[in-house]
Length: 601
Image 1 (cartoon, rainbow, N blue to C red):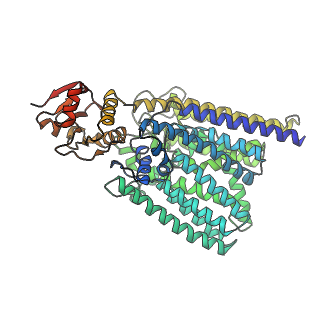
Image 2: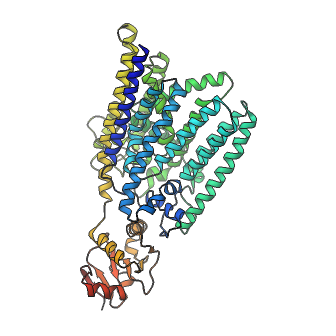
Image 3: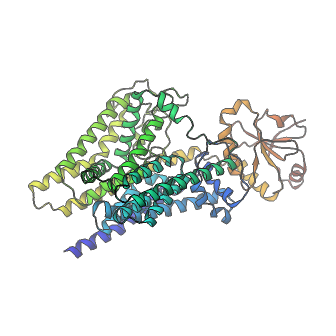
């Protein structure tokens, strides 16, 4: 009997991994670079790591771990479009690799078998909060892997305290910080756990605290050095955080704390709440034994990142007074998705184990009801559901993009119903709780019907979570593809210029900063153009004698006698000028000069 059950879960493990891989590949298929800051600003660090020439971008700053990992790809190709496809493949590999440490955490956290652990890990990676990241070359997938492996190491360290284990935990924590600035909070969480670990083995905990502090300091310094090579001003990504928090109205925190919890709930189809209850119960047992062990590590890490994200967006400017209104700030998920993966994992393991504990299910529904009611009654009427949304920032909520309103409506808006403009909130909530409702129903039936075995409930609920989670990711991909299409501006002139520069590598290309009519879009345009033109480096500012200048119709190159402005434009208000010199003469002689709009007399 036990062999038959074990064989079943081994087969289920293979199937679930194939499904997770399939949905991730499906989402990644046909994607193109969309973030002129987050993606370009991160992966370009890889060129710096190799000592290759890199353009100076305009970004608030990004930490370089992901870019350094992808650095070898620049040795394979100098074509940015090929680089992007290769980076997508690397991201897919990392996502699939993450299933292994998740499975090992599952075995230690919940006591499932190795095969069941693989099923749980695969489901976590198939759910929208992580699967949608396959459509981008953002650092979140590397961060997720590092956080999960660090969690596994912390679990092993608790089981068998060793200096090697604590040093490995410190190293992984430093690498996580090197990969994302927001992981400073994860560093603090790990150090807090190590402080509590002093009770268990003070010598090892002390070594861990020193090593974590030193490695985090080194990682931060190294990251800022990389930033200085790429951006001519200091790192400003987290600038003003404490000022925003101290001046914020606590009423705004209700919006973000409820909104982000709601996003995690619907993005996991309720499973994360079960995981939270299970982990809290385990943590309570630890406290009763006067210790803070693996469950405490998970809660401290997840709670710290959750609080950081909610406080970061819980201010009047982000939520209400920004000229460019953003809906995703209300239900932001990208920062906390990596650390919440372990809580989701715990919930999936509870489904696999066919948990029917009345206390667990009752507390789950109490938390679900609290989050849902506050979100629908308090958050939804105030939130600009109609405003700008980035799928990568709210991947857990984006499966319900089709329920978003078609246009702006007055605020405060109506309390959500199935038919009004705010229907998104109600539909997403009810749809996402279907697996949890069936789980609860089967648990209740099992009390009165002995024929309903634990195995049947386990298979039904686990399969349901996998199916609806994968379907949700597939539906979310539609919105993600639309987002990609919006930024797919690889116009014919870009291809022509790349061909010209390939034949004339000595040509000097620059950017004209003095176009006041489009100054608000200059940062994004500059980054796009500097990315598209690689391996040619676009200078920050043009000078007399440059060959090609990206400017505007009335920019400074328009006063250079003999300069020609090409008819095709990379952006509506951006123009391409080819100035008098050897390049212009060569293009005219060979007949390769693109169609000209005008020549300066």
